[in-house]
Image 1: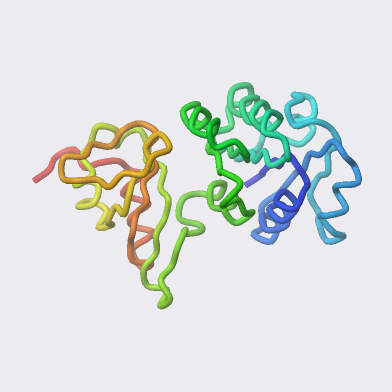
Image 2: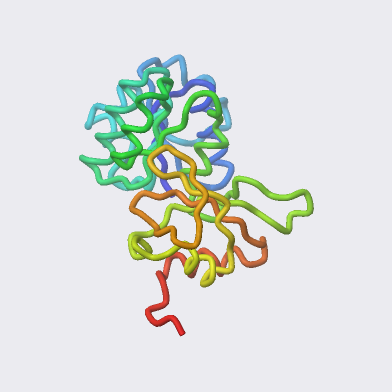
Length: 222
């Protein structure tokens, strides 16, 4: 994957190094050239001086071939403008923005931009939202047998019952984030657009679970 990061503060620099350690290519944008020192001498990615909402700066950072964009500068407005440019002008699907003001976060979730409030904000959290589903679970039990993943559900599942998703994947839904609110599904719950499902599964079944989710529901329920 190629990931463009705006903001080379503590989170941005940690995130950049973590992605590089996982063999992804990274470009970091910051308006202060001094900030790049945080990346350390071992960093091989691109360092682009400028503002992450400037289209030319984004293009220089390789946004056209990017799989994900993370806006983690210290300004809410800059992060949101940059996130929207990445999503709307360049069509990047995986866009994460750091938001200090929780009141705004819900609005941006509705625009399809994943936001993380500062309280629980770590490079680790951004990493989980950038990497493909299944790469980094949110939680593993101490034995390593059970994991919990945040799973964005493909559109083909919208309108299906959560019960059917559980039956077909063999996973269990712990809870659903719907428009910024956590909810516990019951037998009648139907999957809606932009639902973020927290799924409990066996580590050994994870590959199968993600495959079933990607392929969509079985057409005929026997």
